[in-house]
Image (cartoon, rainbow, N blue to C red):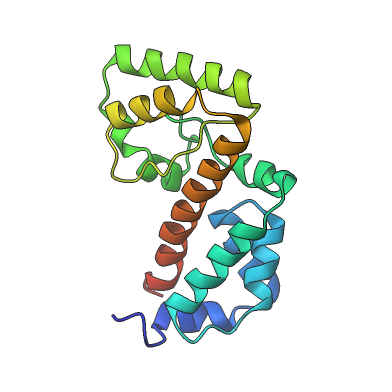
Amino acid sequence: MTSTSTSPGLARFNVLEEHAAHAVLLEACASTAWARRLLAARPYATTEDLYATSDAAMAELTPDDLAEAMAGHPPIGRPKPGDPTSAREQRGMAGASEELKAEMLELNLAYQERFGHVFLICATGRTGEQMRDAVRERIGNAPEREREIVRTELGKINRIRLARIVEEDA
């Protein structure tokens, strides 16, 4: 599949009833502002158009919108029970040692204490050690810098989740 033509999954997304499409988008990202922006731009001619709209919507999210989006993400190392998406995305922590899991818990708590929200990283394809190193590196950031890193990471996560929506079989 190329991104220059409408895939069957994208075509299905384009014709979903608005409430169903809204629900699908909120599963990808818990920000209602982001979901509304993507809904308003339907139909999409290509997946690249969808991704570009997602990126533009991410750039416009307010701090409150970002907080709403982050609230939909469990801490690294503790995927939501029964949620295959968070389990798949955090697969790098699944085989981590008990020591690494305990360290991540401590780091997650310290990060949350410092910034007031969960540590957010695009965990897909990362090892537990890479995620630990990232939180260690980012915990010293200024809040404004960290907010922009979170925005970037959330954008990466949204693209991965949107790809699954538009590429999955009927």
